Image (cartoon, rainbow, N blue to C red; front, side, top):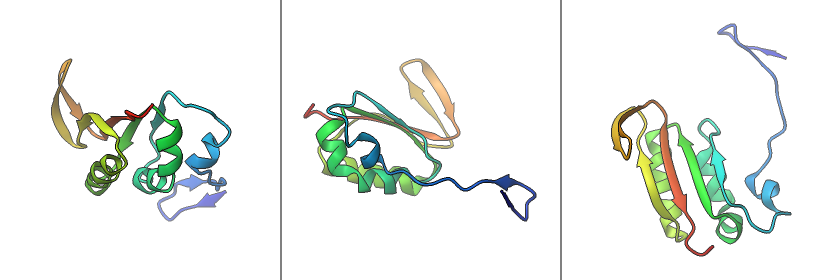
Length: 112
């Protein structure tokens, strides 16, 4: 166990890549991703596997830079955005205005 200066404690766990999680799967209907600031890096590293096997991504975002990066990387791979609600915003949704602390992006892969 690690003790931080703030008084918080944590444990170390081994990292797992998205690619390794889906490598043995033929097709994935949905990945619901909320990985506290590692969204862009993880999805960028797994782009080829996602393009080939995943139908939809639902992503919780944790910075403006990550949101902007996803808006560049995913369309460059042919993904289509279905919803994009920026963090720290009040956004109009199909259910009316919603206040977002974390952002949310939903993408579909038209190839699958």
